[in-house]
Length: 231
Ligand code: MN
Image (cartoon, rainbow, N blue to C red; front, top):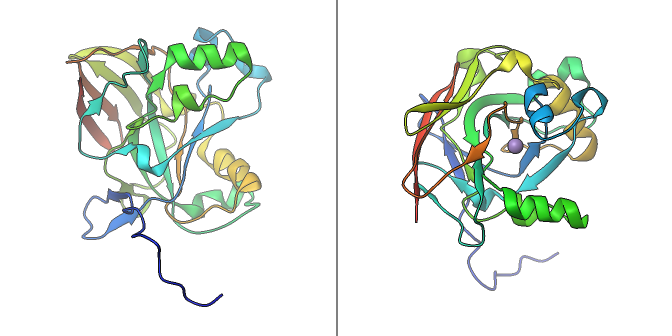
């Protein structure tokens, strides 16, 4: 192909800041794992022991980095889901579980914001989840912390406070499908690329947010992410 000039400038590259690093990480794709903590699977009415991991996607454009979360006008029931986020650092496919952590660049804490009313309707009608899961500003995320600095955490508290009150609480050791298994599974579907993010699922205690709420996410090896729900 000859080098053609672009019809219009490409959209801006979404980036994540990296703690202790001048450079930022360009974000490629966003995968989200469903029902990956037993207590959350149960609160959603499912038997976690019977389910292989499943996933959906959000757009890199949906990331909110260092800003507030605008309440989406198309929903009346937006829920918080605090999650550990895994960042991929090198490309690979069909990655074996025992090699998977070599592909992980670092970790962040994020929110898989969900329009529960739209997701519930989609489930009922057998339609895709996109309206409930992949909407504008649906993926607030903290800065990235490098595995080179903190290692690969397999335990540690994860929680979410709404207006100072604990709503979700769990521990990374409760993940049904662990990070190496998730990276391996995703690499069977996709050629994983540097900058891909995997939201690893949410612990129990999901619930609605309202305009004016202050959300504080915490993940033991990463730190906090604080933001406001705005109108
Ligand atoms: Mn989720």
